[in-house]
Length: 389
Ligand SMILES: [Zn+2]
Image (cartoon, rainbow, N blue to C red; front, side):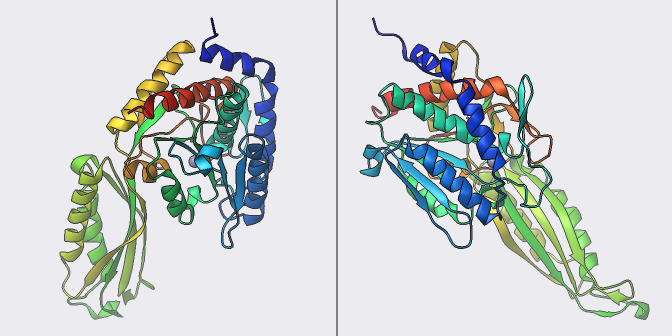
């Protein structure tokens, strides 16, 4: 009788528990903030080296204005067969001159810039593929790995590339950090950044009488906009304002930056429509206003396809002896773009941790091994299951 796959995966990893942590330490030692091209290019070199040992079709995609990126494929994927796409970003939020540079471990945790967001996730992807390769399951599977370098600034350059590679895939897995209860992410809210600009008429403050103050009009609009909180499950935050040149001048210009989060396309449409209506409605005569988008990612609803992948990964977790909850996460990731293409996607496959985007960022050491085994089993099972649909 052949040994079940989950046992073979565990048997492969058991004597290798030092290796993933060594790789993590190496990756974290490379400073790779989204604007640090030199560091990101070194990350791309390192990832290409590591992935090139597993995937025969590995190449670095060079870029001028941002960090290089990596695309690594099995032969069936390189021939264009639709399969499974793994996505992880190499950039962190920490700039090149950060004082937060060191990797360290204690008994139960690993610390350092990007351990959780998301160099730990890159390590999980690498070792899950190593396990499948060792068990002879990878070569015939169409698997593509994409490592981008601009996720933390909204993936402006990598988005079309990720969309092109993911379109029509059987499934996609994204390696952002796992939730605190081991959760994997089956849905994410969308995000829209907007700038509201109000124009009025400048004049001397001492003159009195009616005035077209851009700041006063903006104040009315901010209160009305904040009232949209809760519409169709959306949240709205006016997080930054500016305007005016001094107390003795009626301000002719004022602006506000908005952050809107929504659970689905319908909510997005509703809130955008309401915000546009408020923008057009003037309280102070003589002022005008316009609304312009600054950034955004579509919502990743908990689709049937995502729930199907969740059922597969939950069953795998049970084989390894634990329960795996699902999570609807408020923050956005590259999974949002992929989900919006209609491709079944799971996110949060990286290790369990917390406090990302701060110097207290950490992961739980054990969870990296747990996620490696879970991901390996899940990729194999997705390939068994989804290609038959
Ligand atoms: Zn991230």
